[in-house]
Amino acid sequence: MPEGTEENTVGEATQDVSENTAQDKASQDKASGPGRILVAVYAIFALAATSRAAVQISTKFHEAPLAYVLSAFAAVVYLLATVALARRGAGWWRIALLACGIELIGVLTVGTFSLFDREAFPHATVWSVYGQGYLFIPLVLPVIGLFWLRRTKP
Image (cartoon, rainbow, N blue to C red):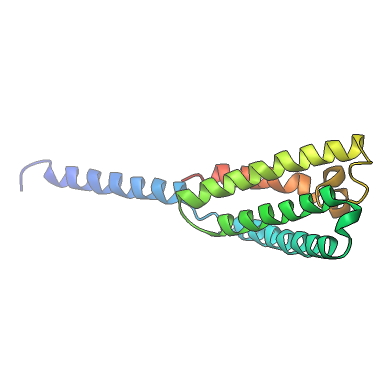
């Protein structure tokens, strides 16, 4: 064995291990550790928003169509975020990012309009008054989701 060959082999092996560790951290599963809690909370909100929208639309749609359609839209966003956060891969990561971004824009927009134009929102939606009916979790959840996605970027 030529002189210095053993040293190069050990150095290359160490470099390979550190590159693999960096890749493992970079591709950390979104649904692992705290991500599992995030997925569970999104799943609960998907179920709650879907149930609420279904009851509102089927029983009293004529009373507040805008509010009830927005509740249904929120349900779709929560469902999409739940699935995307639970799945692996760069494509699902992008979908989760989009869903959390839409959710944040939606809760800020609907929350603001529901404060200033109460006649347009005679009945509450999931995002009314920034999610007041749900302890403001709809306002905080997308921020946490976006933070988590930043940490788990592929």
